[in-house]
Length: 169
Length: 169
DNA sequence: GATTATTGATCAGTATACTGATTTATTGAC
DNA sequence: GTCAATAAATCAGTATACTGATCAATAATC
Image (tube, rainbow over all chains, first blue to last red; front, side, top):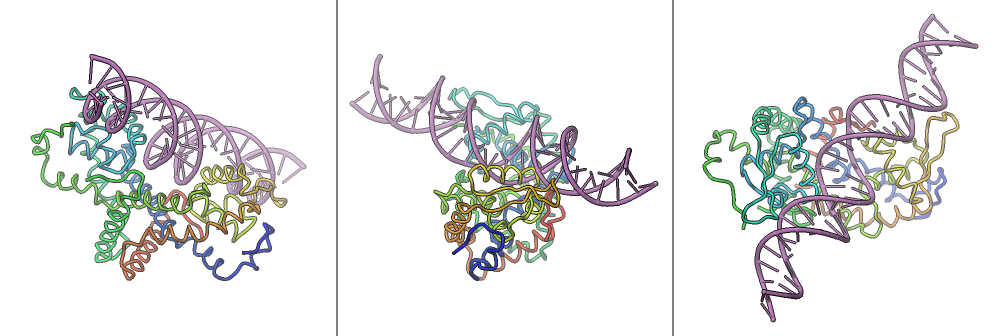
């Protein structure tokens, strides 16, 4: 492709590349980023007042299901790298939502538990969180929603190994 | 090595809520976050050596198509809030990929242009970027890919207004 | 038992993504 | 023409997400 950075070069762009450039807004990665932004917005709107983010909610849900899971395991369970997970958990600990305990069998390990306050928040957020997830795929017809979720599962399972923080089940 | 949660705590959870909690990994928002992570990984892998992120590539593509677009317009065009956009552009300017110019018709406005180096990078990244996007939905059958992209368009268009940084076309 | 390797956690650094406040320039109302 | 409202950009602060390095505890090897 021949081009300088002068403004009037657009007209000279070759056809295929221009078409590709114009498709910016329809590339898979672009739409995935947008849908992620949209979901986070919907989640924060539905759960306003709790000041809990989607990832924080995922962590809290997982800890509720497996109390005492350590930070390493938690990260692998929900697909968050250890550094990020440690940050999020530290923030929630400061707010008395979670509690960390040094494991007796291995002093390197920090086990995570929900506090009563954390459990209360989790319970109260159940419905709003459900609504946020539902609203994210609401615009699809009912059949389309199942197809979409099935496709998402296929893609995330296939791509899991390529992710920097794969989910380990 | 690490002990799991005590089973009796799980058993105490009420049935519907436990089912909901166990579905953590299948909630729409969770899978969208995961797929976003996966795409970014694939993109950075395919485009390694350029040190350009997906969002940076989107901005560069848009500036290539519309040289002189200002920061406000750019943010709206690709769905990035003004603060984030200013950060990204500042970073790319420091690396001599983009260039900012104060508009003559309005001294508040900063117009953005690609440098020659930026245009070169954009050209060279065209194929790897294309591959990254293709690989993101590669695991679906060909028919499924079209359906999936169609659903993504529906959802992002419907959710656009709910996003904090809606795309303005 | 001492040395080496591995592992969990943390720290420093960077990037996207947002909020709310502030600064500066322009526009609109009077 | 002046003053208020608006708009573009920036700044400060927070959160997710990652990399690479470091540290301390454990496990493996000799």
